[in-house]
Image (cartoon, rainbow, N blue to C red; front, side):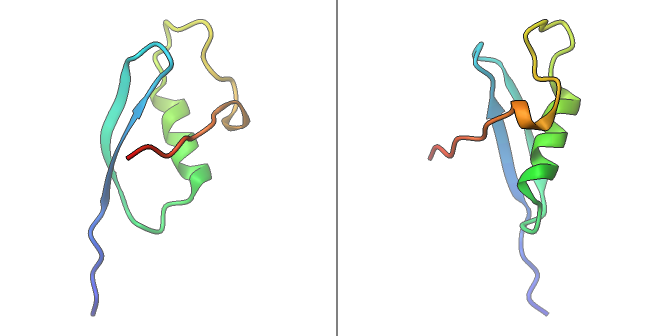
Length: 61
């Protein structure tokens, strides 16, 4: 059985703060990632997203 390692991801918010790093299985969908970000978004940030449609993921290496 081929076991794939989980991915470790960190998300940088526009204000320079980070969410994560958190570990996710390779089969995690973009929608699931966005839901995770939305749930962890700092509540004191009044300009935060209201829905997952308000979140854009940008790939950076």
